[in-house]
Amino acid sequence: MIVITLQRDKCIGCNYCEEFAPEFFRMSKKDGKSVLLKSQEKRGFFTYKTPIEDAFDVCDKVAKACPVKIISVKNV
Picture 1 (tube, rainbow, N blue to C red):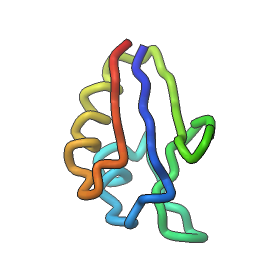
Picture 2 (picture 1 turned 180 degrees about the vertical axis):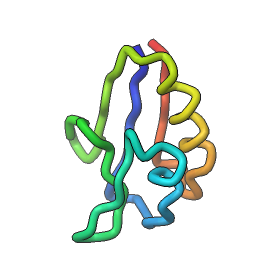
Picture 3 (picture 1 turned 135 degrees about the horizontal axis):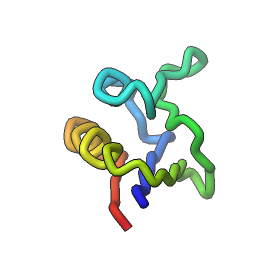
């Protein structure tokens, strides 16, 4: 299971996440911040769990590219 987490309130709107992984991330038209698609919010953290193993490599690239390091990816 791949677990992707986003701290949306700290997003600066750089758009790397959507460029690298448009199947998981979009930029909000309201506030210009990243949105983790299909995620659940809990205390400011947006989390999405997927069994798709390919998601790890794509989202790990996004996490490493994020200039404010608000995205994490785990294989559990």
